Image (tube, rainbow, N blue to C red; front, side, top):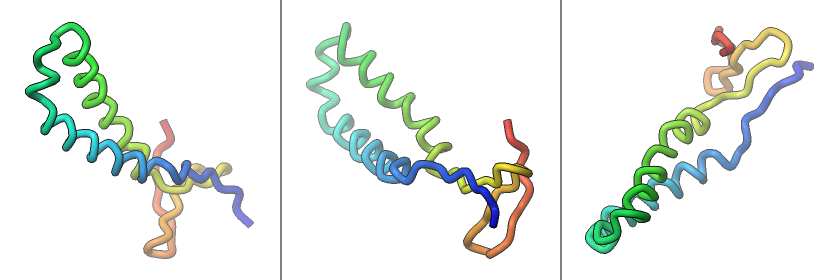
Length: 83
């Protein structure tokens, strides 16, 4: 039996929620652009949050011992350098 580090399952739904928030920001931009002190920096922070969210949503399970990425789709493993 292999001891596995499994990423949190909630990253993919969080990514879908981020896309929904981006759509909402596009629709509400004229209202939000009127407040340059609070709303514009808040929009930038929400947009920047998507970069690590994309990386976390695409992570696969990793073996604790040898750091091999477990690829369940093909039934095998492939090497991935741990950072």
